[in-house]
Amino acid sequence: MKFKILQDNLRKLLWERIEAGELSGLQLAQQTGFKQAHISNFLNRKRGLSLEGMDKVLSVQHLSVLDLLDPAEVNKRASILPPSADEFENVLLTDLSTAATQPLITTMHVKDILKFKKTFLHKLKAESDGDRSSWHRFVLIKLDAREALSMHPRLMPGATLLIDRHYNALKPYRKGELNMYAVLKSDTCAVRYVEVAGSELILRPHNQSSPIEVIALADGKRAADYLVGRICHVSSEA
Image 1: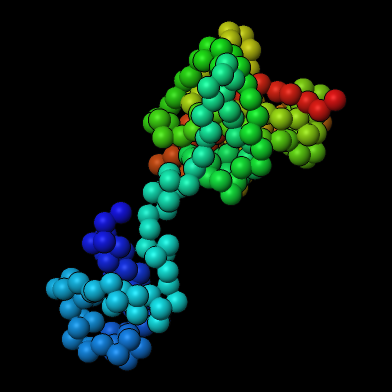
Image 2: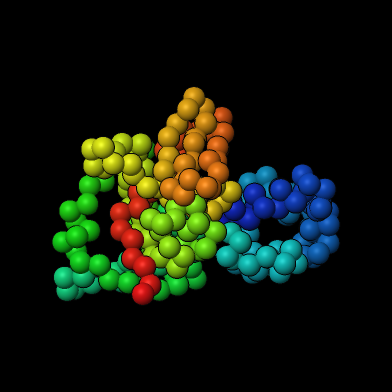
């Protein structure tokens, strides 16, 4: 990331604090020891700051360079997917929320790395509705007891589910067979059969004693925006 972009991001943060009433140009000048005109020129893009000047502003405003970085760029650089040179592919196990909301899985969210045969993964058909090219395709989650109850006996507590996040279309993978999806619900994953009724997403459990859930599609959102991916493999602990 270029120094100019860091300065632009710093300006943006400072203006957010000024507009929120948390800061003024005069206060920032007093904190840093710079002339008010110097701060005004920086805020209004008439001049930049030296490295020492940036350090001083960051220090008095209790910020770090990390606060100026683009989160998407940080995620991209911090994401890991170790290469595999044999017949097995490394797949990351993560938590339900990360699997549902993060295109790239960062190191801090990796719980384990499991291996799947490349021949198995490569033969799985993708069916993306929208652009999923920037998403790690395959991720793993472990199902908790509450989610497992809704899909019992097809799924058991502690089951490890392989999600194909490049399959978020409401199209049967096999004719006459319902797809099982990981679905975005309250920033985490629910695992259900899914259908659409008007502007609502219907989440159907396998367990008939569990309730049907309904998610109202937000304005501008489509069903595909809520489908994390198709469950394409299930393994249970012995």
